[in-house]
Structure formats: C-alpha cells, structure tokens
Length: 279
Image (cartoon, rainbow, N blue to C red; front, side, top):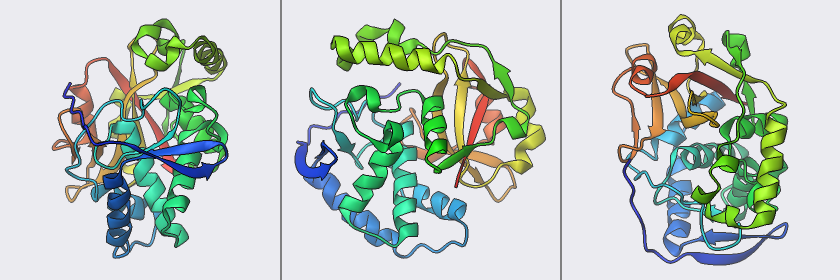
C-alpha cells in the first residue's frame, strides 16, 4: 500500500459550523477556488453525469491515507491535495452538489461536506464521523443524498458483526480517548442490528446493465469485522462496460483498465459490492 505524506501546514479556520472548525491549508483553499472555476464549464443533464464529470477532474490526484486524522480534536478537514477512496467520493459528491445548487462559496462547500461526512450532518467529535462505509451509506440515505439499491439488484443479506475499530483500538489514535472508544463501541452495537446486503461478485455481470454512471460502488469484504475495504464511482466506458473511477491505493485517482467485474476478481477477500445511487 503506497503512502505519501505532506508537510504543508494546516490552517485551522475559525469558520462557524455549529461548534466545529475547519482544518484547511492555504493551498487547499486556493485549490477549492480553482476547482470551482473549473467546474463552471461543466455541462450535464443528469446529476449522475455531472457527478462523474466532477470526479474525473480529480484524475491524477495522489492517493494519501489518513488525511482526516489531524490534530487532537475532530475538525472538518478539507484536503484537495491528496485523497483516500472515501474522501474522494465525499469531495466529488460535495462539489457536484455545490455545482447543482449554483453556489460557489467556500462556506457553502464546507456545509455540504460536513453534511455528507458526519452522522446526521452534525460534527460532534470523532465518533460522529461515519467511519464504516455501510453506516455512511445508511445515514446519507436518511439525508436524501443517496439510495442503497443493492437489494433491488439482487443483493443477499450477510450475517457479519462490524467491529473492526473496536477490536483494533491501537490502530486509531483518537480511540486512545476512552470516551471516543465507548462511543465507537455503541456505534458498532447499533450496526449489528442493521442488515448487511451485498451483491455477490459472481452475480454482478448479470446486472451490469442496471448500473449507472455515478453509482457509488463499495467493495464488500470477508475480512473479520470490516464491511467495506474500498469505494469509488461506476463509470461506463465506450466499450459499454462498467469500470471503477476511484482513488487507487496504487497511487492516484484513476479509472480501472479492466471492467469492474474483472477488477474485483483481483481483490483479495472481496465478496461483492454494495451500490448506492446518488439522488
């Protein structure tokens, strides 16, 4: 797994988001303005196509792990210099939503990003971040941002406890705090009561024509305690096949050379996909 670290200083801005602050470097603030100018030229009829066009403007952006683990208290991190798979999806959805709304202010963008990233859109410390991607999908469905369509595609329910963070506390610096740790255990207990629906890998080909540009594809895993190991966007290529537009651990935001079905066969522990359609 490739890791790239950036030493650029983070500027903690005193922008009021409830009681939250924003962690953003001067370069990221500049990149935000450059991105909004770039997006003004995009034209698409459907939001799904707009989303793919926005996501493609991130092609070549370096893959960077743990960009949200900043400081000692949870802040809304804006990092456009390096993305992991989840922050790539979040930023693309946020910019596409901003474009659709006709707004372009940094405050509008951070409001949208906060809504997407945190439970019920409220930044209330580290545990309020939607750490598990199935939880991310479920909560953003409640907000009207996405719809989980896995079941309608023929997904099957999987019996599996989702508790990787709670059972691997030492991997997460913020979980040194006992209050954060207890809150994560409560989140995992709530997740245990929710169904986990996965479209098996060997059934994706049969429904590939039902996938659309901009569908969020989450890679389900057999790894104990984890629901999802990776995510990105479905993109239909000229060959008619669905590929994955994603922040790849191989180095940068890219589009898979092979169709999604073939790509998944190379992913160790992959058992299928979960599909969320942006609304």
